[in-house]
Length: 335
Image (cartoon, rainbow, N blue to C red):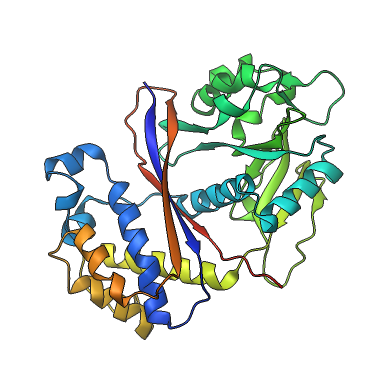
């Protein structure tokens, strides 16, 4: 039976003004997302999410690797399907000019492995893909039918022996994070999305690598001959990302300090300590109550929250470890 993963997308609506209120605005949804990512059985033991206090959250939460990477992966996917020109134009150009993907109706399919490795997240694949959907790998010959191999690709992520059943041309396609392409031509390419460009790796069947642009470096799309990938750096609002990561750090340090004010070495900057103090003063209250209480202290309309559920397709009988993904999305600046 399919399970559901809750996705909470935070969209920047206004420029950052006062730092404390901006940080408070970002910390609120991070707290909420962290709460709803807790394992269901643990939450049930305390009577539901509404009964989890900040002190309990610090004891129940277990941080995992790849959280920020998942945020970036979802943000790229979401931006493409929302037709955000800051993302869409660059990816479409990379597909057309460098990967020769035909068509004019771009879309993205999320095919990312969550951090515990127990499940594969396959979003929109069943509704977008058809029996004639083909995955282009850059080799001569008839492209493989993508929908036919989707379940096998999902299983191959966890079970190496399954990879032997994949055609040679797509034997590494299970490493894809997204499939991007055009729905009118029904042609797709395997895409790797990494928050650290050094984590891009070659794999048979992957064509495109998407990474954040680095400050002071060119954001021009280029071919990485060593990895056999077209690399598409995505520019983003560094100011917003900085605030988001600072907010993430405040919550992480607060949880590590057992829901008390962290030591100064952990949060040395006064604005960050002020926000952490807001939380420490309310450690005995439920997380949901604190989120509401902090609203008047937040920068108004910095963030717009959208929550949606996507299907989780189990690939083995392990317990679900991830319940939510928090995805930052920067405000578009018109020039």
